[in-house]
Image 1 (tube, one colour):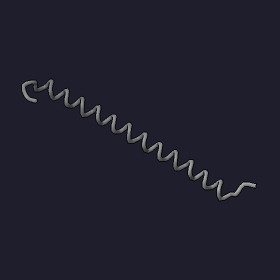
Image 2 (cartoon, rainbow, N blue to C red; image 1 turned 30 degrees about the vertical axis):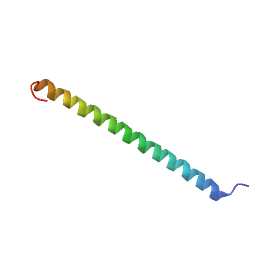
Image 3 (cartoon, rainbow, N blue to C red; image 1 turned 120 degrees about the horizontal axis):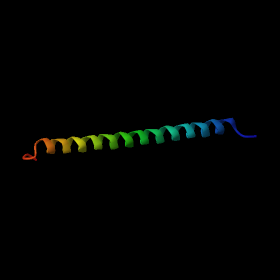
Length: 53
């Protein structure tokens, strides 16, 4: 017979793994989106004012 404590521990480990993976994915996506936005703003600034860098 399986120990219920080990089952709860395994379930908790799985939930934490999913939560951490989701958090890392969210932060990666947010960083990628922000980087794209900053690069887009830099390009717009260069277009609107080509004499200044």
